[in-house]
Image (cartoon, rainbow, N blue to C red; front, side, top):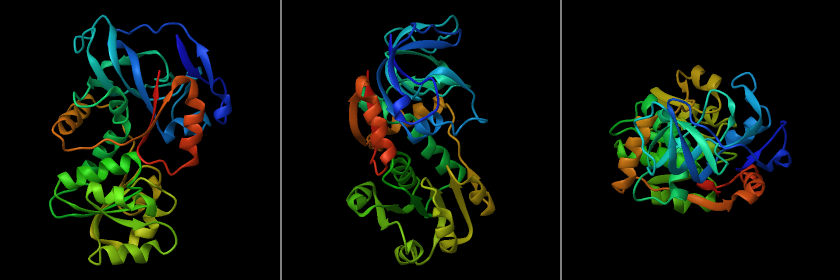
Length: 307
């Protein structure tokens, strides 16, 4: 079985196309023939060793936590799925190792749901981690009807879903992004704001009454720049600056496998209420180049690998 692996921490240069043994399902797992897998910033942070102390790594490690594919084998006690089911999922496990950038992968049933019928495999693979992160962030910050919400990095994978989910909850949204992504933000229903020097003043101009909720998917001081625009009692979350979020009375969000959340997202997608943005699809042989592009930044939507 072909897979992308790394046997030491480092740059994309440590990634190699390898031949691995076929995966076997555990009692509560299934084997998925991977039709598509998307990559995320956390992948390269893990590959560089930044998650050591948080999650153990088993070498040779296969990267990637997002998957869409077809069930080809079921474990001894995995009645949730049958061979032939089209599924998608956020397949993070308790250790780093058996990721999704492979032709087949064993995935716990708790991490999977039936794929949205209206999406291709490539589109479905672009959903799980980012959409579940956005869903968790919107819920933990209790976004509701009439709220003024600020989304940092609105053109990223998580930010795009956070805008849409906030709008579905009845909120109005301001989102930060580079100017070339402003039309995209408008298409999602957000008022765009250029990030960078002078951000606080631009945020005040975009929402003079301030914000009830700040969703930070950017880091790099975004919460500090937003602090003076937060109304009394405002809620906030961050996926990268947990200490700063907690200082402001908010939470850090670390997405978890969530089959019921995937079912909910699939229903919203199939109802036409959520749009999915795929930046580019690469074959497995070009996974290194895909990671180079991802690590260069300014990617709108998701980078997808199709084994």
